[in-house]
Image (cartoon, rainbow, N blue to C red; front, side, top):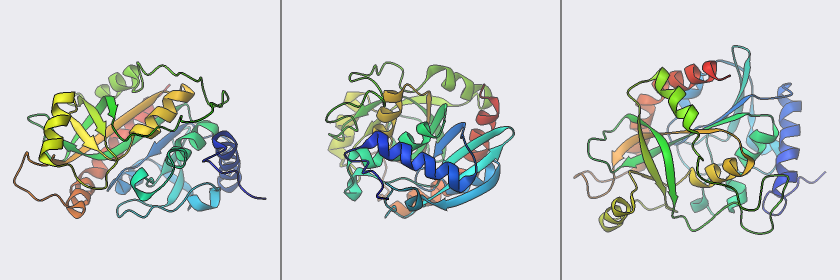
Length: 278
């Protein structure tokens, strides 16, 4: 049977992928979903006991990631009495994918039962005092990708035509995160299309607009999650200062190295958070 196309039939595609996931993992319902960003893969080892792992392409509707630092598998992990669904990477707009393909993972997670979604990414830091290796809670975002996963006819089964975006990054979850790690700061994340890093002039513009973190992911997934009304927590790992704020030449390998050095600690943080979810 042909899998529904997430580009044109996002609900049916997510429903079908969730059904395959339940069959292949033997888990009828996953309670929490986590999407790991660039270099975050070691964090998955801290999240609990892996009970199943399979290529996302076997679920239908998922392309393989073409970006270094992003895996193309999904894990089912037991954390206490909870089942956690962990995407070991993501795909991006700049790889040439439709916004609905970028959002297919989180939509599948919600159809698989996830009552909470956790998004992670690697980001450039703009706010004075930010440092490489620092985890930061996303409190809000600016979507400058020029795209949205809600374009076209609305499917009410996913959510309302005009979803409220006043609390995309759920305030109560950010408060919970600070009970685990009181030093966590909050910031506004600005999403750009990429894949180029920003020019110094663009960084200056981002700062004037109120952006404090900058990256090439997350915002479309966050919109799709908010559309469903599912609580969302998002964490950026500052891997570099944005272009023009330091003398270094930005390179993806350096981003991955910083992320990998902090990923296990971040995994422990997320594991503690999952254990405290009610």
